[in-house]
Image 1 (cartoon, rainbow, N blue to C red):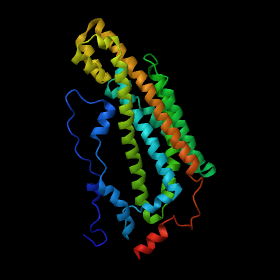
Image 2 (image 1 turned 180 degrees about the horizontal axis):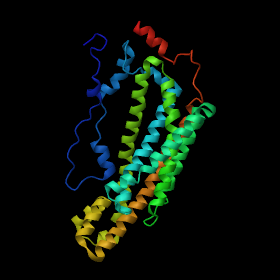
Image 3 (image 1 turned 180 degrees about the vertical axis):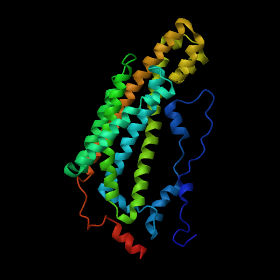
Image 4 (image 1 turned 90 degrees about the vertical axis):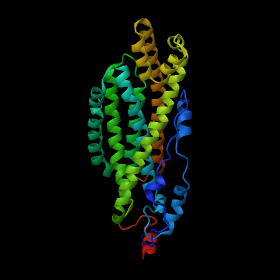
Length: 323
């Protein structure tokens, strides 16, 4: 190991999660489960920042985050991914358990988001030079929020048309956001640090998406359980069976298949109504997160890059340290 890297935290070891303990009998409430089983903060992650500052060849020069173009674009991408991935997580269940599609049919019906993404990305490429990153990212995130809010209008009988329209709007908003935000991140770095920019770009999306699935999924599950607990169809079931039906809409569907007859119909109707109500609440939270991302871009993201001859903040010090 070279002298520059000796004693530095190993990258993979620094971010490796601790194994989650087995859930207790009967399970935990979803929000509590997310809190209990999340990996605790790692001291070596906290220690990484000064370690990266003290070496002449850091993996990530944290001084780059002084650049508002780099930081605001990264945060906007993270918040967009938070809202998008969390929504796709529970939208998949909506398609399968409410609209009745199997896994393949549900996957095929996500194609409109790819079409919208293509349209948004193409439009963004043409307008970026004229309007700037601030306007494009802000508009994209607001459109993303509008698409998410549209999903809150879903009902047990609204069908796939509403979902398709929402996915197209979502894709266009995502395309308008991703192109200028990625351009801002990459353009904020010198050419020799392009790999760092690409890594940060990918990491912000992955972290935002993972948090979106965990947090929004927990919110939806908690709301679903709360509604199902007060349902007459669930209260009429034996205690252990009622607990299973309250756990998720998938579990309620399994219980209903075993019950058969009018009790099964009542349970399915209750589960579908509870899931749609929970999804409507949760998707508004996701839309709010997208709006926060739009406000971040509006407040902190510069419209255009600095002059080509100007080095990003921190680059000069880094070059001197390397020498």
